[in-house]
Length: 269
Ligand code: 1HE
Image 1 (cartoon, rainbow, N blue to C red):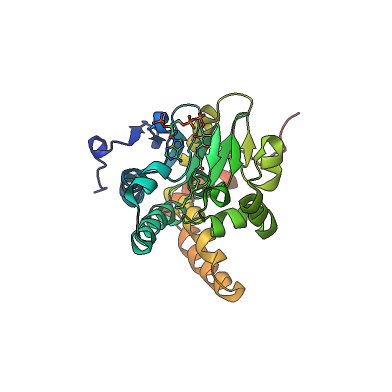
Image 2 (cartoon, rainbow, N blue to C red; image 1 turned 120 degrees about the vertical axis):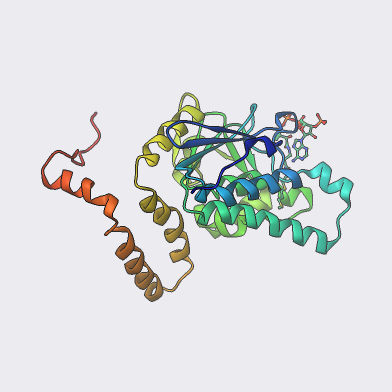
């Protein structure tokens, strides 16, 4: 029996369940540019801890208003006047949420617009696919604010753009946008229209894959990046042993064998 997600308990996230197994999770504090306060992080932990066991087949992660996310709630941080230990524990909760996303096994497609900055970029980089519209821009303003990244940018943003660009972004506040952001790997898609619409399209596509295949894609690849090549090859064999012999795949393989399944073709002009 899958777990139920009680959407009434979410306040800073608005959550919609679509019939096709795609859920839309929207940061819902547009007046604060969706800045990440402690309650929002707890709600992300809650949702993404439950989603893999609740039959969620794909998630679109969005931000309401003109900006995806302005990062750490700087006003809350200022008002709370936190101790080093307090803030360490806050960062650990961010990691809990973002690790649940990256390693949870449910495909997450982020729909980006406007500012994707600081902790907002850390959040976006925990998704598996990022779609940006023409307004989206990426930056790490931590250096200018007298701060340092605490939500995984040193790991995930560095993975996306490389160490030298990550350090430059932090030192100089450099902003990336448009096609250049895609070329660097900050997003995989840029669209002229709505990033949300395109993210939905991609999520619906991913949701048609078998859940066990998606689980492997959206957890094993990340785990294997943390392993030695020898261990990753071993782990890949074990995962493939389980996934590639799943009974649910037999109908898909039969359709290929009897030539009724779609073939892989180049994109038409
Ligand atoms: C906020 C935040 C926030 C806006 N925390 N309240 N992140 C940053 O350094 C980015 C800070 N934000 C901005 O640069 C701008 O707000 C935006 C470019 C995102 C949007 O600009 P704009 O002109 O549309 O909005 P605004 O007038 O600056 O802000 C509107 C309101 O949102 C205002 O609140 P109000 O009550 O006065 O109306 C702002 O205070 C509020 N707001 N951003 C709190 N970030 C685990 S470590 C992670 C470390 C980091 O993430 S550092 C990067 C922080």
